[in-house]
Length: 425
Image (cartoon, rainbow, N blue to C red; front, top):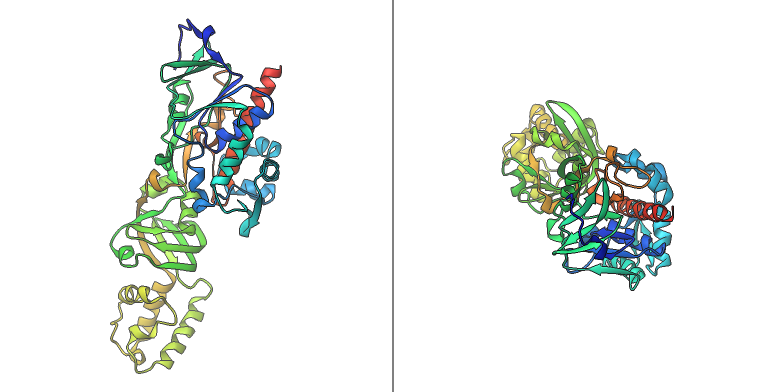
């Protein structure tokens, strides 16, 4: 990282700013930099820019959330206070206005989520690239090998044996999630070599592996309007309402992704329990009355055949099995104690969590460059002059709904603006 012998640096091609990474944060940094008239170089190891952007929001790219400031902050669950300055300077309304100004038509959907009107994630990347076209140099298929640092200050970047000079480098290489898009933790290595502390990284907004074969038996079953709860040693840690999906390995869907986004990653290493309430709108007493009505209408039928109005067919067999009631037992002979057992299963269906899935399936990375070593107004290093970190390289994380991309836009804008002010001074 540190290059003491700077012979030949004077002959480098020089830039006002070099940006490593052409994802969301890097592209916004470049867009901001060229807007200030800075001579800008973007180094991207992939063959094209914005690879991760293409797959966000299931290919539609929920690029921000236009909720009020307090709601945005509430949805940033790791180091939210660090984002105050950059969100005030370039917030969600600024992002929408900027995209509209560079030709991207936008729309707002449920939950204040902003999307391109075309529903094409590629249009977000295209708008940014079009705006920096002919105003910045972009090197594709080029990996940054080292950042040149001398006497505590940035001097340039080395890649593929070539050196590019600059007193300002913005690292926007992403985290570890979806490594197929190029997010392989390069920025963390740059940070460590520069003397920065990198907080332990974990996959977040990711599905869960569940012990046993119950989920495999329910594979493909999607449930709406359920409530989940997570406990560890009988202590409630988290709860959420919404939709979930059973898979061959465990559980996924919005409530599960939200769980892994909000909860401390360490709890998943301690064998917590997932509790599912299939009928959260009904109390146990109300649900019991519902069961009695259904049983009365089907007095001479087998117990297992009397749950079709209450549960999806795929779920009935598993619920009956866990209740301990014989499936062929006539409903008019089901005892009060047996009914109570069924109610427990319906209101507290338990699954033992084995672990979270890997970075290959994680929407974001929790962890990264310690914010205590960065300036919240500029995202600049307190250790190395001219070194900045933006986006997922920094230990800031949020829930789904456009909040993580807002972090990328605000941090990229903050870093580039800081470079401009530094050069102006």
